[in-house]
Length: 404
Image (cartoon, rainbow, N blue to C red; front, side, top):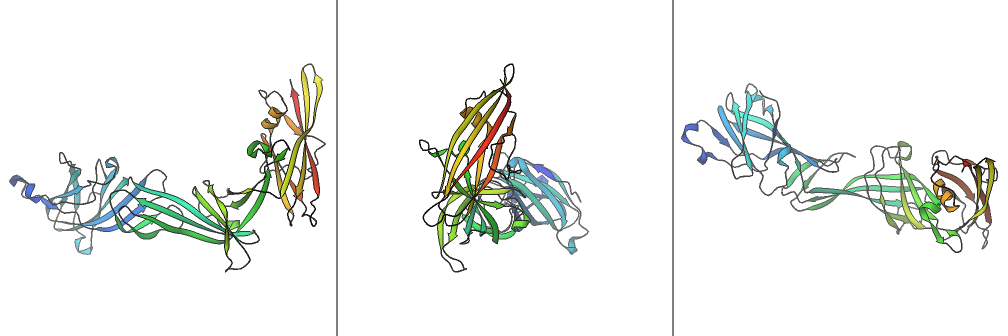
């Protein structure tokens, strides 16, 4: 039995018996109508292409048989078709030898014909695979945070739009994430399916002051925009981490009260980026109105080192007020190149810099989020006392060394 795959230029979804077209000299050639599918697998794990594999039981007679496929009206890529004889269809066909002899292309048709030889009459199991266009997919999420914003329930959905020109009855759908499932996908049908749902996913709500990324809310008053995010960690510690999280729109809700039966309020929606295992997804919630951050350049000092070499000292002051009823942590981020441009330092040079002694953020820069180009600190803010919010002042002292 020949088990080598045949890479074919076209493929087909329906079979047509061509017995009347066979010339008398080829009377021994039998033309087989394409039978119904025994199994169909649709692999949606690739961003750019959909792989379809189908298995069929083909009845053969002793001698040479012609199996005819056509694909008119479908969006199969003819250059990707592979045909393989898997073997006899049942125990009663176990001693039957089957070989694929050749493939031909009838002129003027979206079809092809395989010549298949059989050592005796019986049935063979064949597999046909091909890439299919028009079977579009996209992911979306529903995130429902608990009232205390410590955890959320994350539901992941896939939406499939079938404009491929063929339908799939009870196809086994492989998403590349989560478990496979069997669903019919009708012609021109749009179907949304739940991939998985995880309850109790720990989250962190962040507040960020980052002028280079988020700019000022009120520039004349030096007030920074302070965006809020939910941070989801895609790892086992946070009840995820079984697979990457695909890119998709996330609709975000929060419960109005504790408990399973609590109603929810819509907070907004954001696009969640592709998130590998052990990475994190940040979901934008809007701008905080009850945290005020004023940022000013407090000092800019030049110290001559030697010749035309100088050390430049830049001190940035933050005046922060938290009008919330609970204490929070504010992330303060500065992009080094942004600070240099803001203070008219020459940006064409490599920036050698250190944290200066006037810095009041005592916990030091965040080791995970800080690097040569960006520094991140965390400032703890107390809850307001009645109608009053305590003003917290912090300074960040950057020393740019050996500049000219």
